[in-house]
Amino acid sequence: MPFELGRPLGVPNDAAWQTRVLQSALELIEVPEGPVLIDFPDDAPVSDEPAVLACPVSFPAPVTDLNDMEQLNATLQREVSELRSWYNMAVNKNGRTTVGVSGLEPEAIGAFLGAFLDEEIPESPRADISSFQLLKLVIEDLKAYYYEAMAAQPGHASATGTMLADWLWSETTIGKVFYALHENWRESEDSNKRLFSAMLLVPTSYLAGSPYRGTLV
Picture 1 (cartoon, rainbow, N blue to C red):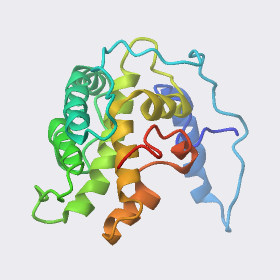
Picture 2: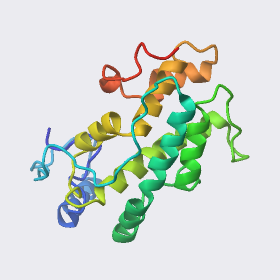
Picture 3: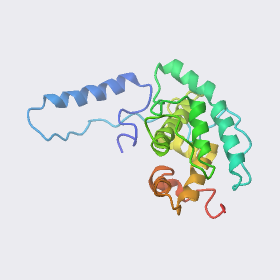
């Protein structure tokens, strides 16, 4: 594919290339007739990054009891906290962030997600939207938070989306939290939980690698 899925402008931090793509897109406005479907003439640059990401953050010890939701939640909160300095570095360097749709700070986002590991649905800290509406935004914010924090670490600026996704779903506690909620909610009587389990928690391509499949009781 000429452009990696999720990166319609090419690799990050290549301003010249991204400007060229944007200019080409804007020039389509001047086409006198439509619909218009024009291929971009060149493939996006390929990252020179290694095939495996090495994270310098020493994450908390992995959860060994897959049924211990309290331990899983505590480990998640430490993990979110340990990524904070890298995330701040990314924001300072880039002058922007894609985190923020939930309207919560990263630590509050992590705490809200972790609260769903209990059987009771936590109350939404925002009066304008429900807990499940906020959960959808929190999931997007946390993924962006992790990806931006990882990209700020040495040698990871041009990591591909696939590399970052593999890291999140195989090496982080937040990935385990998403897997755990997916497993717990698959056959729930709550339609909102079933919807999240089916569509909004874990990408289908990563479900086969769930560390929780067949282990939660």
